Image 1 (cartoon, helix red, strand yellow):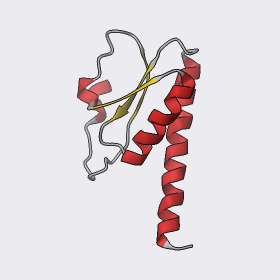
Image 2 (tube, rainbow, N blue to C red):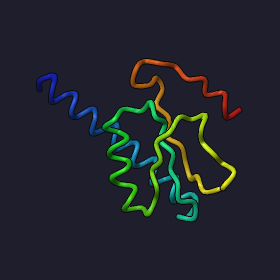
Image 3 (cartoon, rainbow, N blue to C red):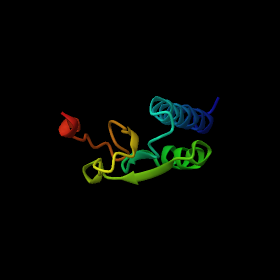
Image 4 (cartoon, rainbow, N blue to C red):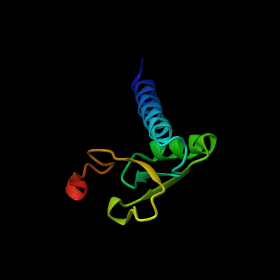
Length: 97
């Protein structure tokens, strides 16, 4: 297997795991909360697959900076965070503590 095939397979695995996480969050809330937040520093291909699959779950996949998430509406079923980000940055995930 060449490097291109290895990268493609890794992207597929990451995307599948992200969609599985989105599905689990949706199921935990029994489909009542309709927004799944994707951190803006996730890999573009992970964001794309989540947005594509969100329609099948009747979810809105919203990509945004984690500091901009508005939880006051009560419609967020889950948040996808990538650590470290696409550019290698390390976010302070203490915003949830």
